[in-house]
Image 1 (cartoon, helix red, strand yellow):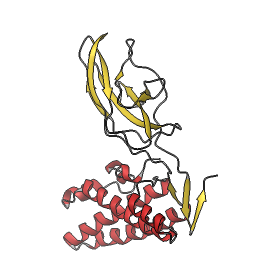
Image 2 (cartoon, rainbow, N blue to C red):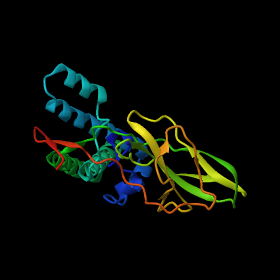
Image 3 (tube, rainbow, N blue to C red):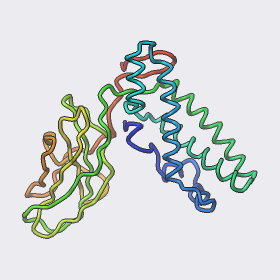
Image 4 (cartoon, rainbow, N blue to C red):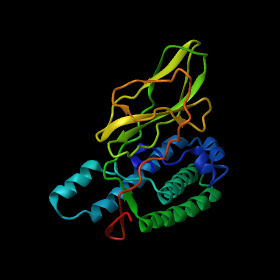
Length: 256
């Protein structure tokens, strides 16, 4: 699972699964969709932080730790992803109604406010998943080339952080790099987080699927160089770390 702090759990296409006309609404009403997605992420995160603080014991050290780390260890479950999507739609139709005082927008606002509330309750019943040693999603890698025998190509690339115990972050956003004739792609990944001991690179000549290119995790600060034979055919990237504990119903439940 991706972490809540990795970015918005949903994008415009995700919202269209719930409301096919949402892009038309945001265009007509001049509502900045990306801003609403970010706002919904912040508001869901603030709500989750309030819940986690309520479950924190009265010991000062633990209370200070939760306030310090915020929601950086919260994993996005399917239930939380749905809550975020519905909450985003609620805020969009709230703004659309306030722009036009249109009853149709008001009905949509009320509908998504109720659905978002229900999704929040489902999320809390399922539990808020916490990762004990979270690895945030990395920024895209930096690219270059070295001399080789491959022809020019456009590569789609993602990277992940890896821990000593084999945990792997959610992959970076897909980015592209076009090489030149007689070269091999290289990549580096900067700013490793605490807990990371290495990184993985995934690449392909199409946006999906991307395959793991290194047989073992690359050392922090080291450069990846594509094999002289071209792309490897390793496994695809996962979607992030699995929670170690769940907070739900006033209790902290350990996985399994």
